[in-house]
Image (cartoon, rainbow, N blue to C red; front, side, top):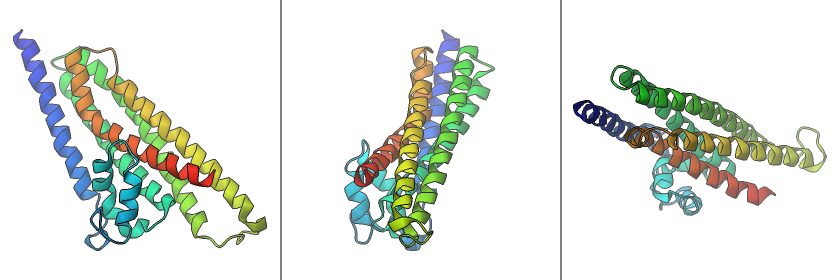
Length: 223
């Protein structure tokens, strides 16, 4: 009984550390003070707020993306890039937190350590998928900035097809990353372990859900 209680306190402490860590990510994500605006303010802030309204976690969406308002402007591609970049950072933090949980639990609870290690593998896969998504969205942003037909393509139609293909790829990768997050949390481990895992991964899951919603909305505009 005493051992179970000690494990519970240990896991809850890890969850609290992640909650603080996730908050730190939001603060440090700000590019520079000059590019920050409030979510409902002028410039790109209103644009971001309107797109965040269609996500699952609009308050989190506004908090994490408002710092990018100046560079996003009114570009869905740049907004999607910002959302995916923030999500990649959150996934990396979640992976680090789960690695710490696995290392800490290895001495007190082999079951918790095994669950955490399984989760680490899934999160590392999610990080790889999100990295691909960021790289693809960066390419889309560059194509968006190029004059139509500048690469010798007829009327820019080839570029449009390339953008659609890359956006579809990003949708697939971000959706797969979301699935990995879900599998990590919904494993077959004991309830106390599952809740500790959820505490470490929930922030990354919410960021991924928001980024995917924004990319899906962008895809509808270019379909």
